[in-house]
Image (cartoon, rainbow, N blue to C red; front, side, top):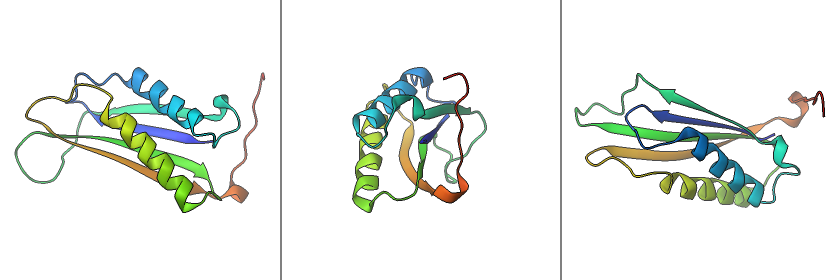
Length: 121
């Protein structure tokens, strides 16, 4: 735990998903909220088919969903969300003429319903 999901639209040619994931992971490690760096699991999905709103002008998005075990305060969640959003803002050169929306959403995972085992550790 945690699980980080990064989704981004295909019309962002300068966004390097591998670089994005390592920067986001490093931000989570730096938060001090997670006991071991290897507990952070992140993945990225490029969205080829998408629509943002109804206007015809070109738009894009980058969205992070961070699933955490429940029990953290609202203040900690706000700090995590803001620090991840700051990383998104500085990920790449954003294309001219494209409206880009960046978002971070934190989700609680019920501790009673989550189990994990590490094999080969």
